[in-house]
Image 1 (cartoon, rainbow, N blue to C red):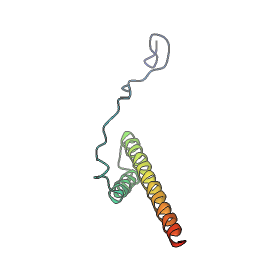
Image 2: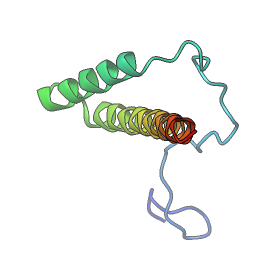
Image 3: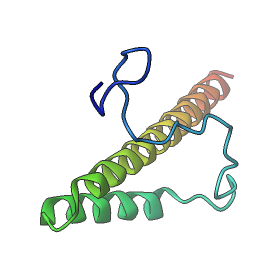
Length: 96
């Protein structure tokens, strides 16, 4: 039997099983900053583009950057909704 197959003949790797337990957020909503996260994403991109990282580290950096981009997108979307609501409220008040 090959090193890549288990006793059932299915392919396997030596990678650890993913931990699917919910992880607490590192920063609370009050501590999270959009600008800081953007700088973190830019730093990750610079490291990836430098070509100095091992492939595994590239994947880790990329994965973290994607998650940070999702947080930024959610933040911006929420703020856009707030702005739209404020504009609508101001428009309604000016009609009186």
